[in-house]
Image (cartoon, rainbow, N blue to C red; front, side, top):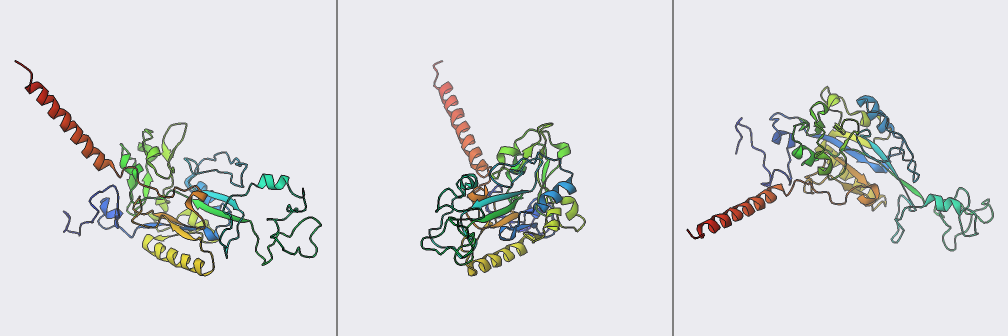
Length: 345
């Protein structure tokens, strides 16, 4: 089977709004598209430096957006939005990074309550400690009276940071693009999704359509903004500014197929090292959005990072909805005709 220009047609599952779509750029009208490009964010090596946030703002000339601390962590950008296209999340947990044991709590730590209780009783941690001493543990020599060492007996700290640089997912099936009435949102030859702000009319349809809550409007004029995966840089062979600035290679850029292979190998490496909670998020072409162009390696459940556990493209059911609406309209029309036909003359 070929299309009208003689190249093999792109197969889908019969619904162009959902399901696996291996060649999104060709399906969007680019017959000679390069390999699909994307991000793999390995959160296990993110150090929370926010270099990606700064590089993104500098390259794209994004306005400053307040930098207000949440009061719950060192996070001063709080979430993705029209003026924050990269957001580094900080999550504190009373749990070691590796060698996890069954039954260890995943609950977030209330650092303020812990700070107020420091030294209040012999069983509470003292200054510099990170967790209560395990039952029967010996306090190392030199620890102040009534306080414990910040290290567990095997040398591991019991308070860990989870850090993750979030970004637009550049979905295979992008609901924001599907509902845009002006064509402001479009699919690039690299398989990414970009907003053309100069033709955005500020209708806001794309905002609730995004299953991740990424795309956002600026209050002054209502136009929407989000990550472009540095489309201008890709066009001249450069990598995106955030990936270029990342000092630990937590943000990796490249052909999506290669990134998926690399990510699978990294998960296997972490599992072998005892980090059994490591898992990939957004890499599966069979998920509710057909796979993401920007996917993640997480060390806990997606909800911990503020990500939906099972995202589904919000336009997936549109074909069925239109079929049901047409059937209902036909039934109403038939009833009306029958009613007029039975009227006495």
